[in-house]
Amino acid sequence: MNVNARLRELYPDSEELFDIVLMTNNHAQVGVRLINSINYYDLTIERFCMTGGESPIGYLKAYMTNLYLSKDSKKVQEAIEEGIAAATMFPCDSENELSDTQLRVAFDGDAVLFSDESEIIVKKHGLDTFFRHEKEFENKPLAQGPLKCFLETLGKLQRKFYTKNQRISCPIRTYLVTARSAASAGARVLKTLRSWGLEVDEALFLAGAPKGPLLQKIKPHIFFDDQMFHIEGAQELGTIAAHVPYGIGQKYHKGKHIDTSDTEKNEKI
Image (cartoon, rainbow, N blue to C red; front, side, top):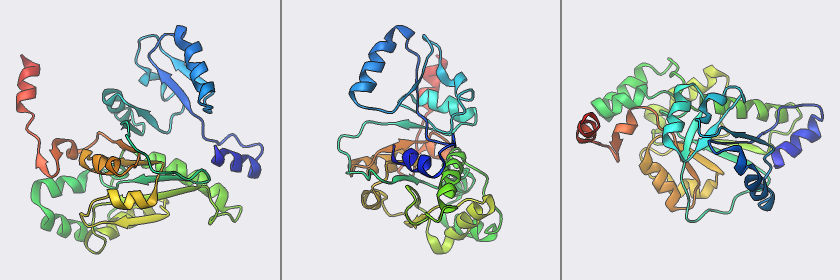
């Protein structure tokens, strides 16, 4: 990993590096096959956690996990409930060509970096009420969302390069890609980040426009969003996207409320 190589050059004795742990509920007997596959694809994975049928979620804090990725949405939800940044991965039929010298990570804002408190107002009371609310509370920081701690971790690594006068050539770059409009709802977001002592390299306010084309231009290694239609739009244009199952947005699709009453009735039966 280029980031680790650069960190080792600047801080030979530091242990603050990217570290990947393969977590699976498979039994230890499959370990040899996993090792062979990792070596075949030349992946940098040295640590395994094979739980023999048990959920690996209980081990995440012991491994000091900063980000948990899985195809299992239920396990992702469990991780978020444990206070660990997590997202659900989906296969992508076609992928954009990605930088091999800079790690690019893109985040949605509400219900990802921030709580869903403002999104609740949009869904329940509409945009006009939302704009008034954000203006009124512009100087009140939003509560943190499930991936704030991961941005914090990335920022900590970025600052190690900044202190060596390598801001411009930093191998980590972060993006805020939000459906908010800048003029009417952007200030609170930026002031919240400032109050946390965090920053993003680029903040992109789309005012409701599709995110896919812009992400295609950015070419992030991963994009996090809480709403599936943004995930789908990103994937259609070759962006690797991960869904954060958090907040009121899980009850809506493309702005329309999802009726779960039949599902709930069936579960009770």
